[in-house]
Image 1 (cartoon, helix red, strand yellow):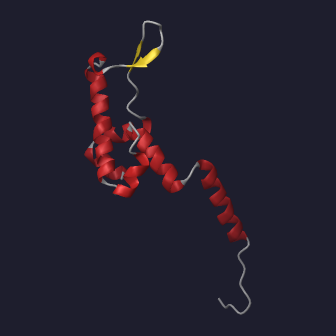
Image 2 (tube, rainbow, N blue to C red):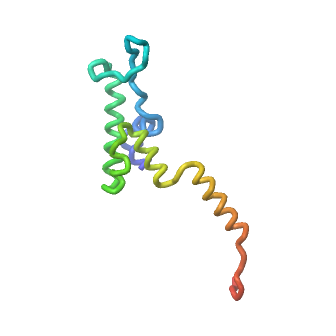
Image 3 (cartoon, rainbow, N blue to C red):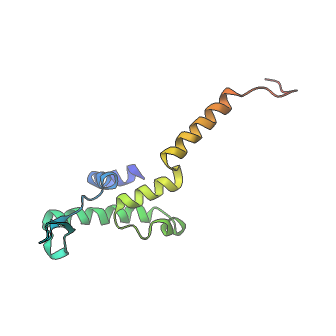
Length: 116
């Protein structure tokens, strides 16, 4: 999938990894709030257009069963992170899996009656 997205547009993969970089503005109270479409400049709109393009490429490459996992995600970064956790597990799960496989390898012995 990575190579396919990079082949379409190299910047798309950066958006998958880093997100479209939220477009925020200061409210009158001094709090950061998301910009409305009217407040977005050309660069902000370009970022969100690239996000939508990357999401399209990823969604088209997956089946309907996968779509239900991330249909509520708004950015491609959220979609990618959801798919990674679903298929690879969290870092703790990966570490546990490696430890288990390593211990199985260390304890590998021939059974009674087996030959090389």
